[in-house]
Image (cartoon, rainbow, N blue to C red; front, side, top):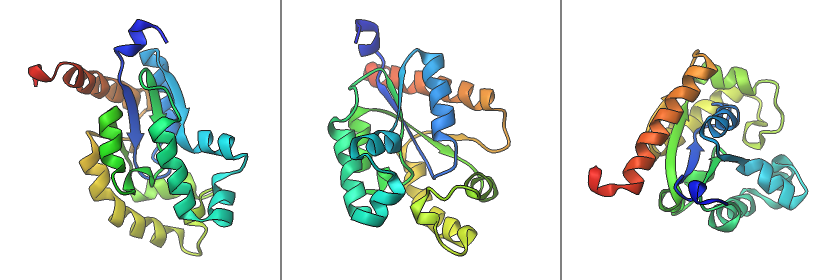
Length: 185
């Protein structure tokens, strides 16, 4: 990693499943000249198994431990955009851990958009239920307060992807400047 990357704190994109963390994250990383990692895909590669199969075979607690290990030591310390799994920040101390490692931005979308993006995807173990809409509503009610507390919110709701990317890049630049120069806040 060159000196320029060391001046770029990691960016952690958090938010509910289906809000576009991976899609937006890849484009933000490209725009910022940073690396990109999807935490779920990285864990799948390490485990040689899908998230759904890990949940089914080993349980959610095991998967959450894998997420903590990934955040602790499974990615570069700087210069990387990380699309975090939807439940990653909800473990004890995870929000504080992410804050200690870089900038956090929350991506948010409406219930309808999330449902539409997740409707044909059976790889989301927490949504393998009869009434996905009710489950999404329940999980959002539990998770939204922490998502909003995590960091600045960027809405990804019926907007052009490039507009969402531009806003996320601007928020990252503003937040990383504060992180690197705390006396200016």
